[in-house]
Image 1 (cartoon, rainbow, N blue to C red):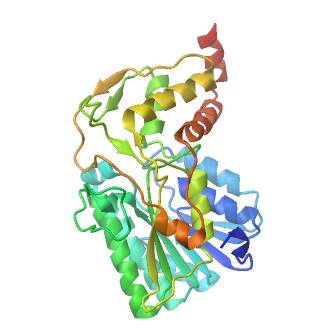
Image 2 (cartoon, rainbow, N blue to C red):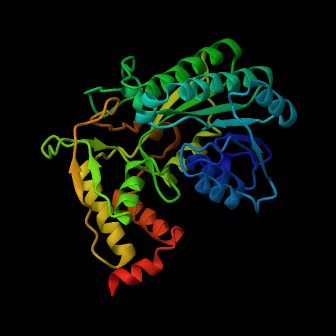
Image 3 (cartoon, rainbow, N blue to C red):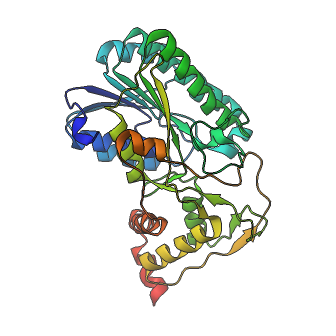
Length: 349
């Protein structure tokens, strides 16, 4: 399967279109000539200006329609499906973040559970060719067996966010079984890149540096047993999704789940030094973070490591962007987006 298999005559319905992955996926589909209906409630979980910047990047496309709406509003979602009759639905709208789910659980239930239920109900009443939805690597919890495989036991989530994502997989399986909805769940592994989410570590560390603040590293300063993460560059995520769109699950239950990760976990400290180097290149000046070490936070998991064998067998693709390359792209964008050129000159004088 390859991107040419996508039928550009089909109507695509992308939720979370103002979000990080939603924006890049919508742009890729639009560039290929597809018609996209983008939905987002543009909430203020993080800088709304960044969400508007993403939407401005989609505005020029004549085949893009944006609807400001919340997927937890059942009547609105039902009306949109009735009006547009989408062929392919990609549900990327969700309340993200592990730590925030401890502080504000209500929004997770509203968006991730009720919102996804509304999408499933709409797909039931207005049948679609394929429903693709975002799950998360967090469903693996504190599993010690690595790399994580889709067949692993995932009934011990360690955060409410992870629980809602596991719930999505169960709900999709049930609706697929009962109503023959072809559905594919995607377990994303730490997605990063330009225009990413400011609540993610690489973005937050960069913000701290420019605000002359120390970064907090939640590993107790234990370098021997350092945390590690499977960081996945945004282009690889979008490539994986677009390759899976034309591949509808078959069988008695038309539901599948895939990891989309880099299959190459990086130790947290290597990730940090790589980010320092990327920012040094972008600024033309050596960058070193002021580091404070603290205990791991509740809900965090010590390691994520994706097996991408199932994805590769299905569509002949696996993410491969090196962390150094991806972080350089992010650093270059960050310096440009926040107009740091003048500050760069001052720092090099």
